[in-house]
Amino acid sequence: MMNNYQLPIDGNWNTADIIAVSTLVDDVLMAYEEGIDCQKLLADYQAFCQVMPAKSEQKTFDRDLAQQTGYSIYQTIKQAQQATRKQLRL
Image 1 (cartoon, one colour):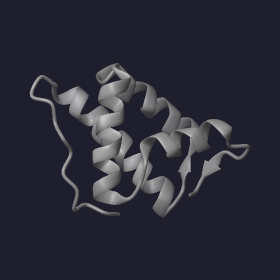
Image 2 (tube, rainbow, N blue to C red; image 1 turned 135 degrees about the vertical axis):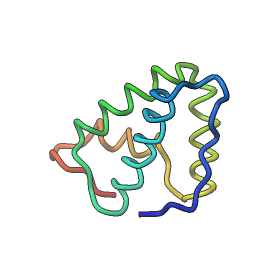
Image 3 (spheres, rainbow, N blue to C red; image 1 turned 60 degrees about the horizontal axis):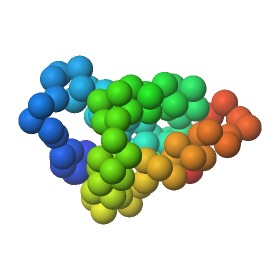
């Protein structure tokens, strides 16, 4: 799994927030590299949305992650929501 990326951590986030965001990032990477359970991915996305409720924040974060890793949170979630299988692999 890629670990050479830098998460843009908000100074107002608590430990649970940081864990929620980093868990989703790990899920997205896993979806591309190994495959992931769609329900886990979507549940972790909901937790991410609690930390970052503003769509503009989510888009900025996604764009930053995509520049660093080549992987998109938005595209991954879209695929998971449309998936007909339990596992998602991109």
